[in-house]
Each structure stands twice: as structure tokens, then as C-alpha cells.
Length: 104
Image (cartoon, rainbow, N blue to C red; front, side):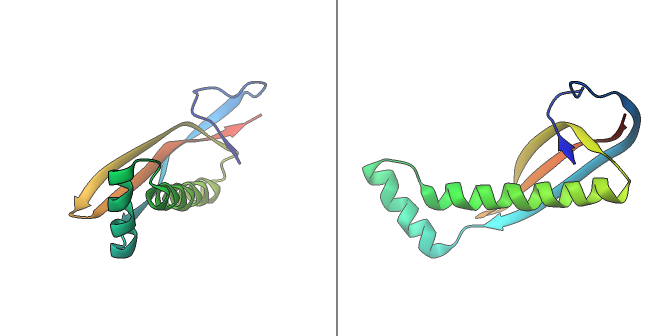
């Protein structure tokens, strides 16, 4: 599966747009990691606990989007975008979406 955030794929011809596909996950903060992150805000530096949580969330959401595209028979997903939104105190959704296409 080819994944790009552009509307074309160099060297490929898009022969059919199959529709919008998406994947998402909702992640919540872990109280122990939240305490560690709080200490980091005092001394400075990267908050690796949140970096790791977001990287994991991106992988889950991308995997779900790719599965959706595969079910449509897509060869690629173009115009990929990420979005986040707060769901409730301490929990956020990570959404990834794009256009599933057939290529030649």
C-alpha cells in the first residue's frame, strides 16, 4: 500500500478514486506517566511518555485506515491528513484520513 500526503504519486497514474478512508483511535493519559510528564515540565526536555503514546496512536490509526482501503481494493491512499480532538478530560482522538485509489 502506497501512502502519500500529496494528490499524485510520482510515476503512477491514478485510474480510479474509491472514496475516503479513515482510521482513528482514542487514547487516554496514564496517571503514572502523567506524573512523570509533570516533572518534565519543571526541568524541561522532551516528554517521552507522550511522544511514545502519540507514536503508538498514529500507528494504530494508520493501520485501521490501510485496512479500510484494502477492503475497497485500493493500491494507494493519497492526500493523507491527521487530525486530533479532545473527547473528554484526559482523552483525545487521533484521526487519519485520505482518498483510497487504484493506480496503474
